[in-house]
Image (cartoon, rainbow over all chains, first blue to last red):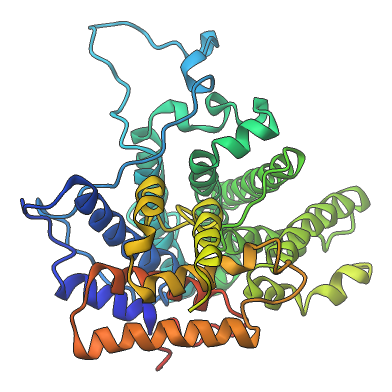
Length: 311
Length: 118
């Protein structure tokens, strides 16, 4: 109800259109922040079948100002692999819209991925491996966002792991949304390629109708991006960086359910590895549950699974 | 209304643990400078959302669903709904709805944050 009211009032009160009014800069900035917060709220938390479509035109409020990336991270890149060719003098680097802009862009794609997951198994939809399928379009959208984002915001050039805990705390205003961008990116890929959702989607296909390369592709993506989610959680724990964004509960829960499914294997080494990652996700969600009761609710039933060996 | 020093502390906690996580509602410096002139419903919403991160409250207890927390959240909701039904709807009305919504979505039973008619 609160979110629906916020979305409706943002439209009816004129918040969604930016005119040249006689407002002070900080008042304009706060209106923009409010509008994009409503958009984020709707993108991240809508019921999959009932999200609102925000009109985008020349009067759409500009993206709010983002916190600056701390000095000493991207500005001192010396890795030769990152140097760009100097061909015609035109920079290929996309313009920097600020870290908040990329969080907003990814939230829109998250909404599409959730809707795709929700509509699993509808026989009228194109198979995921079709170039025109929603799966393919979302994946392409993700790559477009990634290449439209300045390189400095990616994991390695950001040098998150090289920061001292006190540096991370001091620049929390940047690192917190940066982590949201990282985790949203990996979570969208995990959700799109989730083995449980995939099996539901493929149950109407004969085995010979499913391309092997597609199955291999989704398995590789799931494996890689769940590992990234756990790696980011590990890094934050190691750096004593407290995550407090409640949306990260959802990101981690997706990885947890994938690890849980993968832990049902006869290979003892793989099973131990998957169980370990599942526990890390589970622990994070439980810790978040100290601040957000929804986290507690999520981990309540599976606690029996953790305490009991899978075999 | 909670004491002013507690509201001020809650605003600091909000900026640390909730702003841009995920909703970028405020410019930190501007919120701090203008806190005293903000509407009551916004101050109460900030307070009730940020209270969970208070070292005084302690994470072991559940400030979100404690009777005191519920009472403050209800007060914030009443003020917001009065603005919605009687006007004027202001920026602070929508800001408060965003904060209350985030809180509701992450309750144990998130039933008020969006309509659940199916």
